[in-house]
Amino acid sequence: MRAFDIEVDLSGVEGLEPGLKSVATVFLPDQVGASAPVIVGYPGSGFTRRYFHMETKPGYSEAEHHVAQGYVVVACDHVGIGDSTPCDTFALTIESMAAANHATATEVRNRLTAGTLAPGLAPIAVERFAGIGQSMGGCLLIVQQAVHRTFDGIGLLGWSAIHENMPNPDGGRIVLNEGLPRDMDLRPLASMQTHASKEVGQEEELVRYSMHWHEDDSDLVELSMHNLTADPALAHTMPEWRTAVVPVCCAQMMAKGVVAPEAAAVDVPVLVACGEIDCVPDPHAEPACYPNAPEVQVAVFERMAHMHNFARTRAQLWDRITEFTAALPVAAAPAVSAPRSAVPVAGHGSEAGLPC
Image (cartoon, rainbow, N blue to C red; front, side, top):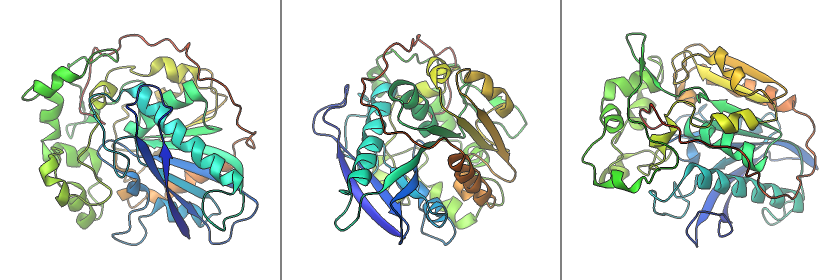
């Protein structure tokens, strides 16, 4: 497998401060033909693009798994996160983050097809172009697809378009009554000593139950649980797939129906995938959120919690993603068009919980 890190200039993305760049890693088979299917992955809150290529122990790289099946994999850092340019996270919005992710994916696709991704790499036509987003990445992916139509199909991993919230060990759900609408100014949160979702994030056993199945590798789990409060002073204690940088707009993403208008506008095939313990309360109710999608598949995996790539059944999910991608219609050349701006977005946010 070959891997290339690339930077993408985000200067033209509306709503972002000037001078920002995003970073993505492109993984390719050692031998690749004139065309290949491509899977673009966006991680969840508190994670970097290395979630898709964990190397601490063998067998935990989703990128390696897909590449071995002949796929090109693109693992992306969100704007302001990981190796992307640091920025004011209070200024980031759901819309601007989604637009930045579209710019990253589009630039990678353009470089692949033009043969300019890396020296000596010939042009690679994109057979099918699929986007997958874990948790927060799934929320942003819905908005990205609805507005920018980046992909031929999207996989939403551990994300609920109905209401993302946390499972409780007693069998119930943890829903906090904060109410952070999408059109609010998030900067006042900076002066708050605490708020309910932050307090939940500090309850280690609750987070452990939601995020990790009890059979997950204990060494990896303990590494990943470092610095749950996202204290920048403790960032050095975190593994490379984690980050202490959390966009403040994550607090909005736990509101009921926060991206419902965009979900209703998605018009490509959708895969909803989650673990049997996850932040998706009723996976089989999710298809109703996508009335314009030609197909909505639902897959629930046993012995898996919210952080899917730690589960011992992770390869089953990875295979389902490749099967979903392989069944997508052959990709057409991307159209050059302005983003859709007619997706109505109300001031959602009667209920909110732990940032996803």
